[in-house]
Image (cartoon, rainbow, N blue to C red; front, side, top):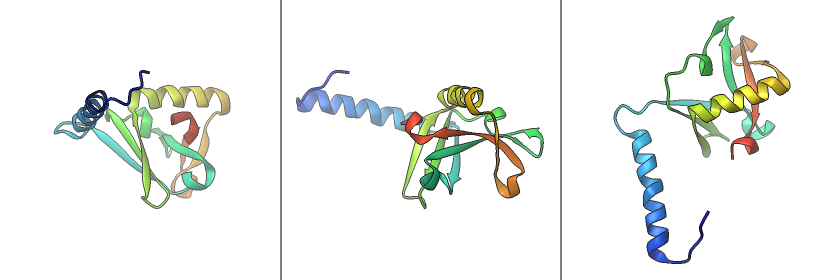
Length: 117
């Protein structure tokens, strides 16, 4: 990555990021939003794979991006669905599925927040 203290370089770099965010939230953009109430305590996000023994969550998503709201809505993580699926496979292979969700009726993958960031 190239670094510069040149204003025009920094402006161009920032504008590219702004364009990317605008594309995500433009009409037709598909974003899945999850509020993970435990992530700020555990350091992991929970990605649902099954609910009540049926595929759900990341297994059936049509979203291009996922947003995980963390720590009482004070911050969140935005991640491309393709990358999230890669992380799900990686951590599933390492640790398998974990029960969770409402009344532990779901199975999912725990992914350390630091692995996303």
